[in-house]
Image (cartoon, rainbow, N blue to C red):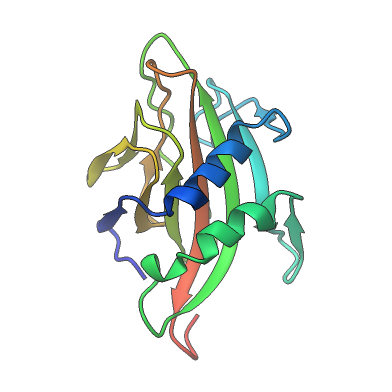
Length: 184
């Protein structure tokens, strides 16, 4: 488990071939983006597009997966050892692709926690390089660099932002739990 206030950056997370596959999928006209009229529960003014690849519902054991999930996840799963510690168990909670459109100025969206009900970590994958940073409150401002993963504690308040230099900022947000046998 990543401690609150800590973060880690992993550059060149996917191989060139894996990255090209994911990049082509997420920019494809066949990948559906869904409109959300607010960014999160702290930012109801701005909007973005998302695609829930996989999520656990409130009913324990109930999982919803997109038709695109396994194609994308298989590329991430083959690199999971870069995210979790050795001899740790991994529980995937949610995988969501986010698309923030270009704005005339960088807009920082509301600080929030993705999943508040249980402890978790966040692995944020940046698909493209742009000037829209991710902000971990009182901890770090992280640049969006293609094929970079930002790891941080899910209890830390964080915020996305909108780019001004590209048509859109795409991220894949992975919420997960890391634990040892008997823990959770």
